[in-house]
Amino acid sequence: MKTIVTIALFFFSLSNIKAQSLPEFKDKPAYYDSKTKQLLELEKSQYNTMAKAKGLFTAEGGFFLNGSTSSVKISKQTELKFIVQVTPGTDPTSVFDLVQFEVRKGKRVFITTKAKATSTSSSFQKINFDVKKIKEGYYYLIVKNMEVGEYFFGSQDFMYAFSVQ
Image 1 (cartoon, rainbow, N blue to C red):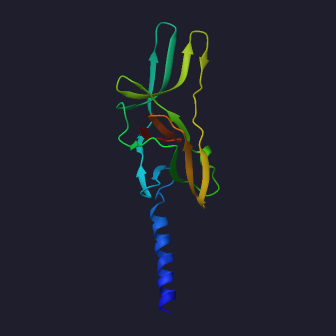
Image 2 (cartoon, rainbow, N blue to C red):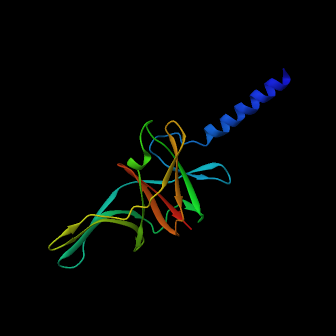
Image 3 (cartoon, rainbow, N blue to C red):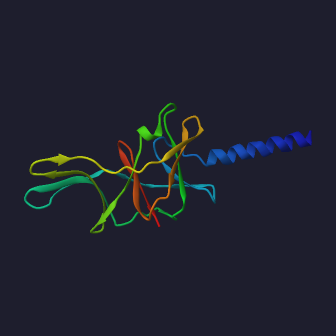
């Protein structure tokens, strides 16, 4: 009987550890440190819009965050894992884009639109990431070979920024 209770407590403690390693809120990615098995919240910010004329016939628009670097620092590794909770049945790639910031004059800038007198282009480079299901509604977002720089996961409402160093 004592052995059964010990085994039951062991499995309960494992499930409890797993539960503590999952984000509490939906649509809010967190960095998962594989070494410490801890979650690190990313820098959350609303979108700050910008539009800037660049000479007489050109302009650009996009978003920015103040500060040249995020307060959330992640060491450069071959593979980075983030965990996110989404509505069950939702593909996380339809909720989040991963993009690199450009640092300009003490700000992290993300340009979405460039305009010339005769045309406008709206495109940006997304960073691909793999998705692996943990359990219903919870997923790893796995990014490989990220360079040193400033990044964010963008959702419809917020930017979740971090720095790879």
